[in-house]
Image (tube, rainbow, N blue to C red; front, side):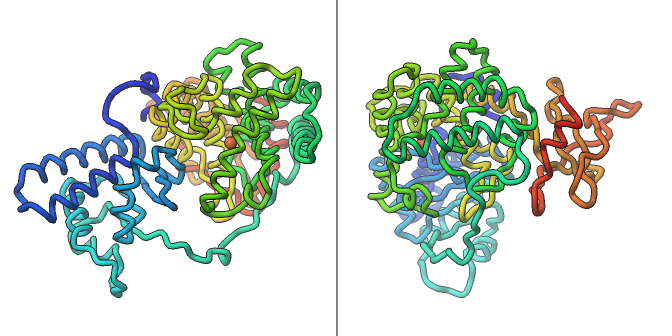
Length: 472
Ligand SMILES: [Fe+2]
């Protein structure tokens, strides 16, 4: 995966921007409708599209492109490209009624051609035949096309709690309470207190980051839709893990944790119904949300006693390594601290629950980051992050090839895909027997592998008891 590529963000080469795939599909579709099938321009465009798709699939088992209100999303994450420049290709497919293209591993070049041909002949009429069966008749089994229709989806919305539930690590609980107070202070129009922020940063660095139970609660999937203060505490801890992994010194770590903690402080100035609105935002609401970066920087420059990086990260954390994103700052590339917070921010957001979406499992979230590496995120930072947390982070519940269900209670640094586990019994409680999943038999073969992460059914197991019983 790309995270193993040490290339800096500015490495030239084929672009992984998903819009290029849409553009190639749109122009192949037009060529197939204009020229005879053997025309060299068709072969060349098909080859181009095939290369682009393969490049994406090298980074994950599926390439999922969705267009929501003109915003191109790759694996559910907004790509934040230049909307104006993307408009033509996006509109061409949207006008057909197609705004979702998902391509899976194993796709053949002929399936790409057949899909483009289908798109040329496609009429968005209400035939009883599904798109899937129409494509299957043309031999297309690895590509799905769909229309994302604005439906009234309230019926399937799920009310998640606003913050973690169940027993929390005491230091983590204390940091959440302090962060909530701090954010409430700013939301009510009072001044941010730099001394409180300093105290909270120390709590995070010296107590929360040293507790495996707290890290387990932050890293594993989060079955709650967290409010800004809670997201911010989690992002600051994830940023700290990256900072340690890339060897930042103590002073830089403190700067990073403070900046990450306050990166979204500007959201306290946005109406809560916009911040919490499920689904796509209207243009006006989106502009308002985007302003949280400049609002945040404003609040932070006016607060005496904060570290100098803090307002910069608030301003830049939605900008990509290619200089795109918001706010518009020309070609300026974000500071490395902002780039770290961007990685932590995306992982935290997608591994948490959202009104219409269950949380993304950590191994899938790592693949999403890998896909964004080099285009939106800094590849070296994504690599450092994935190395630090691994595919099966502390606190994850996993299933093994022996059909055991267990919680990850320790990482084996030399063998990160085979961590230390504590079994969960049939009643969903534990900790049960502790297992080193890197153990091998006499022939050198592993006794078990991890098959997948599983979502806890009902209440999550009590992490504090798992880590109290098995300090790593
Ligand atoms: Fe943000």
